[in-house]
Length: 94
Image 1 (tube, rainbow, N blue to C red):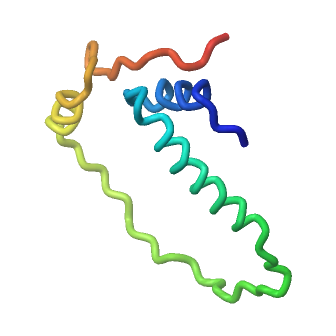
Image 2 (cartoon, rainbow, N blue to C red):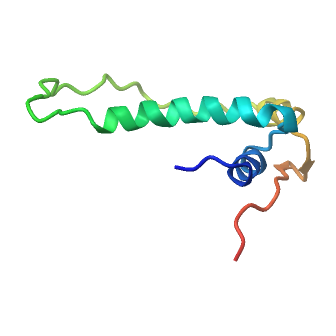
């Protein structure tokens, strides 16, 4: 995958991060390392591996906690809110 300035700008927009122009080269190197690692995982031969764990994780009972202060506490950290909802930029264009 080609990691160029256009891709970095798109990732910055989607993640709502600001990337300083001087950090592009460093970030490009870090992303390349991550992608190379993921590619190396795809090349592993798992043909002889057998998965023996047939157990399920123990489940806990779901409990409804009604505390009207929780949404208010969460919304106070949001950059933009309106009528009790988060306001986020549109990222999908029709």
